[in-house]
Image (cartoon, rainbow, N blue to C red; front, side, top):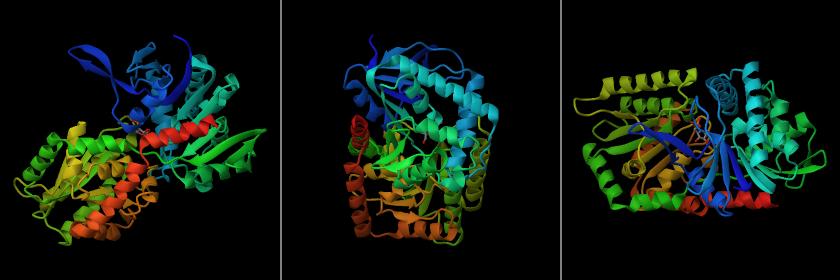
Length: 459
Ligand code: F6P
């Protein structure tokens, strides 16, 4: 097998390891990013994806799956602890999300981060053909563009950050701020979810690295670096198609029957403290307490997917959320009728879309979120153009989805009032808003996003 003309480098491979009947096999991971990038990698017939397997032990050899070459980066248990649980998810993640939780900075996490970023870069340098395109993803791998440019100056290197990028007031806390910026500046194109992220990066690169402004971005040491916003999206047609399937419609009807015909408010999230699951449950509690709604009228379904369970703050969040659910149900539930239906399990695609379809109101309340694809998935799953989206102004999605009911998640009274308004909204207003939201989501889908970034990288 020759070297690749096009490569994706991301923390995770696009596959996950599944066990069935004692046998392990690779299965394509669900999600829009994978479905958007696979066609890009297959286009030239020799695409390659470099990433971690998600396993905390064992070493894995490269393999072909679904038409692309997967090159696993093997990490020891200790390395995962320092690089992924530590530097990526206990330092950078909270710092980039407005310090919703205090970031922790440890020098030995930083050393692991450096050495693992350099490992990713060495593998990419080995796998890439002359002049290849290499697209590096996210906050786990800020240093890869710089390392890779040193090893292979012939490559076209792109970097895209999937999460928010903070302003100077927060970013300047980071003990390794200059290294992170310099590493990222090794790319030819640096992409962010929003214009604000791109602006923050330009400002910081000038301040800490001596870069200067240039058309389309920056100039550093005689090199041009494009810096821009490329808001990510979803495979909207896939959600639409799933939502129109008979099995999905029947499942959604069954949900509504089982919920005794009450109005359905829905939250779907990775169990993460940035998502504002706590505040929306408090707002729902307020809604019931103030009798703006009763449990004969409405039920709140909160579905969560377990995430980053080795990180302490995530365990604490789980306890907090589960306590809140218990408190609300204890106070307002009846035998056979809960106020909050809490699900902590992975839902299959039909189950998830049926839930979106069944929901009258989708409540998306992050304190900070790079984009928030759940909001877009809800919109794409409503072909009958009904349903109300309540959306935090602190998500990237809010800059595009202007017809949502935009809320400030820090304002409990305001959020409660918006949730009540969403429940009462009449059909014509609901349809008008949803029609406009769908137009946005279907025009800017994930395929357009990937094509837009790649064409910028091609120059
Ligand atoms: O939003 C950032 C992100 O890294 C996504 O790319 C990913 O799907 C999600 O968080 C889950 O993260 P993890 O890989 O830590 O499970």
